[in-house]
Image 1 (spheres, rainbow, N blue to C red):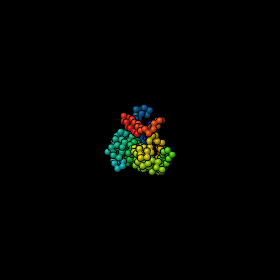
Image 2 (cartoon, rainbow, N blue to C red):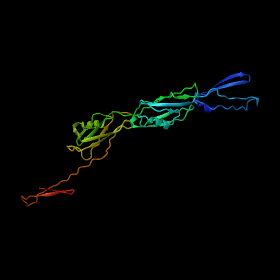
Image 3 (cartoon, helix red, strand yellow):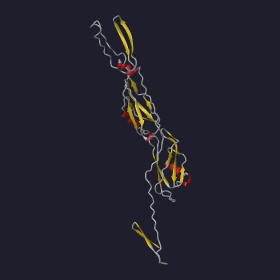
Image 4 (cartoon, helix red, strand yellow):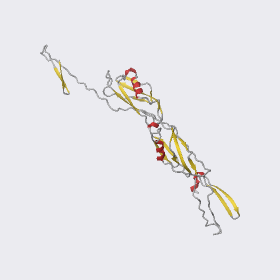
Length: 298
């Protein structure tokens, strides 16, 4: 039968009771679990009206019931039913303090009332690779004493960034490159690396650095602000840092640099005082007026 073939092979044995009576023992594939009782059609048996067929169930197929729990980083969920929905599994996992958020998908039910759940960690607090979930299926049950039940966990590693990178910077005729910077450098470490570049290209105290992250793959973003300093190193637009991520690890690990806000250009005004012809040894004064304030100068 086509509705059986995909599950495996049916075993059939013949038992002779006497010359006129026979019994067939039909064993369905275990993957089919409980199956409907077969219906016998006897219209073609002879002698008509005398021959008969009776179908009975000798042993039920196996179906799964009961409950299970999942553990992660030393914490364990409350008991989940064997047929828990995707939402129930997600809620149970997200109740653990070691898990931020997850996305859960549930497969179609199989013939033994079993499911497969696919769980994706979506929170930055569980970025990159995470420990495997540990199932406790001691609370699961089977309908057939000869049946068994088991839960397996298969992990697919998440992508995570590692390694180091360098930054280059140019100011006027000066150019320099940082030493290697760790992929997860703190804001203070990033500031120190930039200020340690050769030639004093970024004087100490002339920048501030903040950090955002990590994201779902342990990536970070650093915001570098150029400040006023004693030597007035930075005013007006600055050149972009150059990024070299050749020593980063992780699938397709890349970095980029963008300008959040352009610096303002400093305005310069020239004041020129000239001598009038024919005036000798005469005192001169003038006034400068700016934004409502006036000062006199000799």
